[in-house]
Length: 603
Image 1 (cartoon, rainbow, N blue to C red):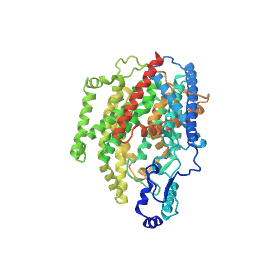
Image 2 (spheres, helix red, strand yellow):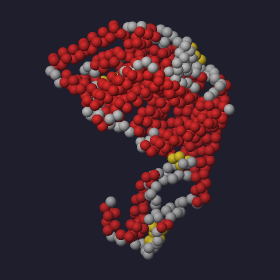
Image 3 (cartoon, one colour):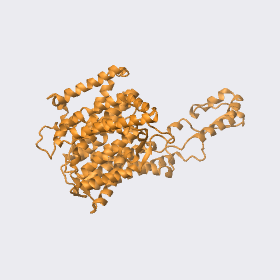
């Protein structure tokens, strides 16, 4: 500031060295250090007492929460359908309780800190700014310089940040997320593993199924929006809102298919799952090809997104990973895209090399899935993770049968997704070329594109899609790319279609993983351990009212799990390799410790 420069010029330069801490500063002639706000500062013993009270309140609140949690577990055990818990279940139950207790205790401590007069410690940006009053016995100009500088610094200092047992208020969001997640997992167990909520048979009614789909589509059309920011119209094909919309409406029909046991649309559901896997290839290849980001943090964040929730559900419910095969498939094919792009990534801008790598990935896929014996030889060491024992189909004695069947149905379509991502610039140029044509020629070109796509789609439906379930499964891995390509062409045929999306479906598309997993346990009820959702969750006698209420809770919790996953990901997976290594070690040690606790409790 100008006044500071003028004053500084009139003083001796050594005056500014006087701003060192009082303990290290010798009094110059006419100067002496005075403690800041000495008159208003509480005695040292009183400060210690005020600092201790929030910590005591934290311990008391956490102890009360643990006691309440213990009684809750006893009650849940009394109505549980299973009493033989695994060591992992017992260990994770302890972890949930500690998370809830830690959050509640710290929350109470943080709430009481300012009210008890304990301000905590300065925030990190203010840690070096401490007010130092310097008085001048002679009332010289130098004293006014130091006093003015001190007052300016004190004015810029923000209120101290409360700290409870080393946890700052800025870290409270992660504790809240962990506690909320623990509560949600308890609710999941309560719904599907206890007798608290009744279960009822599914209502098989094509009329109700298609009527509900039509109603949801009508609502979706009412949420039609323009893509892009305000004042900006985006007409690029396959922009993010469009792909999320695609995922959203497919997911809704997918869960309705389960809710109404609408087996007649099985072939369509197979295509929806293929489209999800196509997006895995398309989205990941686009990211690696454009961003060239092969760093560990980005990859680990993706793995966290795909597997954090499903891992805790598996442990809590004592289910095997392959029950939620969608997560396993996306994880596996994400690895496939990563290695395809990462190997020789310095040559990814070379068209020949890039196509050669995609061709090599195709060859490896053919070898893995279409050469007898190779698949089981490769995946036999992973049977402990990818094996599945279906209680509804005990005739399948091969534990890898489910993994081979599910991943094999879509073992080529992720490669088609990579090809589409690689060809995207060309596709975008063709669409722009059509838009630049004179109006008459443009209309003819669009009519030809749409007509050609419809013809190919009609041929596919007649030749493959209408086959019976088992016959269709045989051709699905090699033909599913055809209807996906047809949809891409039709959905992006005009600028008006590309510029608009249905927000309802886009919102649903963001939580497809969560809605897929939670449908098993809080929207419907499964047959038990490793069981499929064969029953409906019954809260109310009216079918539609019951479905509306249960669905509201189901979608809200799906969204909350999605948000919690992101919050905890940012804490658990930092953006540096060293931080990831340290956190990985901590999580591994914690996992081993809680499992050991579970073993002790079970024994």
